[in-house]
Amino acid sequence: MLKKTELITNSDGSIFHLNLLPEDICEKIIIVGDPGRVEMLSSLLESIRVRKQNREFSTVTGSYDGTEVTIISSGIGTDNIDIVINELDALANIDLRSGEIREEPVPLTFIRIGTSGGLRSDVPAGSVVLTETAIGFDGLIHFYEGYDWLLDNMLSTYMAEYLEWPDTLSFPYAVNASKELVAMFGKEDFIRGITISAPGFYGPQGRRLRLDTFDAEINNKLAGFSLMGRKICNYEMESSAIYGLSGLLGHKALTLCAVIGNRVSGEFINDYKPIIMDLAAKVMNII
Image (cartoon, rainbow, N blue to C red; front, top):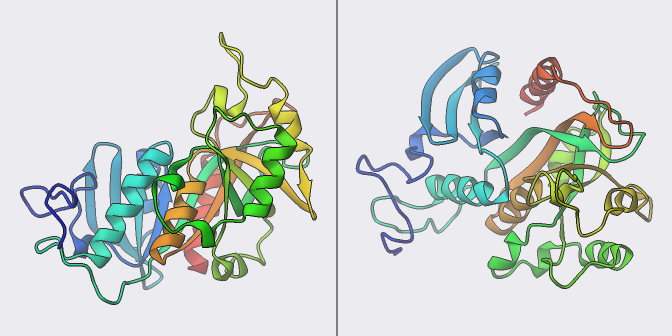
């Protein structure tokens, strides 16, 4: 049985940050960063039975073509993903009143629909990247036990050596997407490859405003990286934590990100709503 300080609930019995009850979610969950994007994607649903908001966490559960789907916003960053995945898992697999954990956990399916920055000229603005592997620069997974079996250590070690990764930063970790979900979306015209999940938007993604980065050439190095045909496609800020925590908890996860800017060409798409809506429709049709 979990202590109340471990599994925190609100006065109405809902989980602390998400402000949700177990019956508010279903097993197929779409994660977006921007709370406003939840409302945008919910326009695709035929009916809505749950609509809740707390902090940056907005949730809608409804029906699409006869199948229930939950759409939830995470806000930005792997720290928020730590909250979202753990609390969604708790809703499915822990009795919030007694603190007892299910003997047979319920597996959830997480699809992240997001935006990202392309790191190579052949990952242009307007394309969509299917993240076969997420490499985390954030270090979140190291706070949990039992992750060694989950990681692609050969990839992360090779990349760290290639980048001459400094000891002052968390060691990168690589986690693969659900093979089942990759196969489900394999027929779509998506660019497939590696995604870097950064713990920030500016310095951690090689951007320089008034502060220099620790390595001025890191983006060029990432763009030139290759291991047995596997290449790095894009930057974003959540997928490593989604893949890592999902794997540890027995859930399936996949990220599909629209590339709205290309770091090589400098091209940026301001009105990327049509790309996201088209991607969301494809996702709902497939899942």
